[in-house]
Length: 153
Image (cartoon, rainbow, N blue to C red; front, side, top):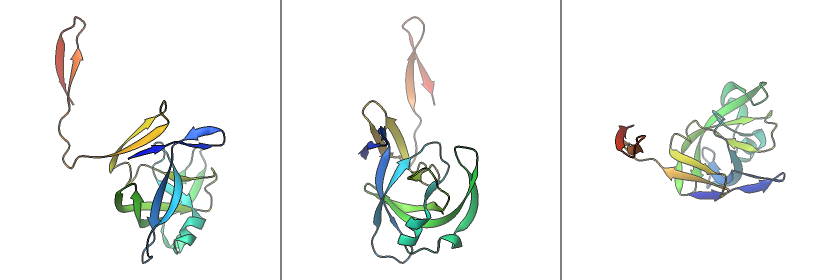
């Protein structure tokens, strides 16, 4: 699944549309989020939790360090999420203190399901399905003198 970057604040950023569904709600609601490989958790604005019908502060309370080194409180809820054609359950944090201006897709529960490639030249982010049973990757590396050697990874 390929998602073109979105122009935001004069820059092209890996912002994708996804759907979230709260427990007991009908259908998903579409939101945008910044795909952040440096973020451990997915964090959305608390207002999004309200829209989904959640009692945000009843989620699992966690303290998360953000980019400037400060701590913010998030409340994690297990929700159904859909990215492209893939639907699954993921822990999504909600915070009143999220100050960067957009929701964040982090590694936990999401990056574990996909191989995610950021292509800065083409300005796209690609989510590929992981194989059920990862095989061993065999690569050939040239030696210093045009000989090739197999490497096991």
